[in-house]
Every structure is written in C-alpha cells, then in structure tokens.
Length: 78
Image (cartoon, rainbow, N blue to C red; front, side, top):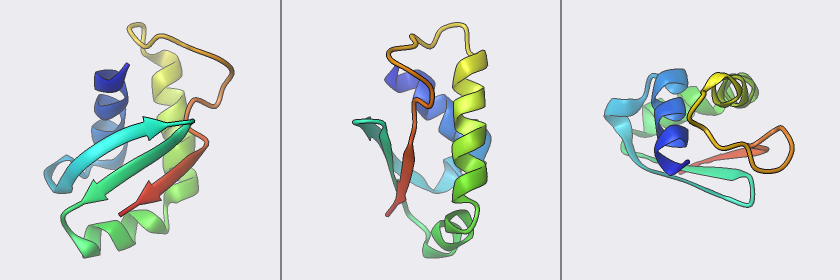
C-alpha cells in the first residue's frame, strides 16, 4: 500500500519533483517537501487534496482497503 499511497500523492498533488518523503501513520499522511513555496501552495489546498487522495485510492484496484474511508484523514506538510 505504501507505493500506492505515494503514487496517489504524486498524481494528485503534482509535486513529485519536490517531494522528499511520504508516509502514512494512523491515517495521517506526512509529506516532506524540498520547496517552501510548493509547501505553502499545497497548504492552501489541503482539503481538496485530501478528498482527491481518498477518491484516487478508492478507484485504485491494487490498493488494499483496510478499515473505513477515509484512508487519509489528515495531511501534514513539512
């Protein structure tokens, strides 16, 4: 699932080039970005990104759905 979540982040955010690390723990996604400008832009889109991430994961046939939706409840940008 880790690879599927990273793929979802890269597709939805469009920030693959600036993403240093992505991991999910207890339904919280932590994204480390190498650009403060990109982080600031994404910060203002957090709600939209969360919705799109969960929709992307729901439509992904290879993602193993554990528990209830949403699979990502919160997004922390660092």
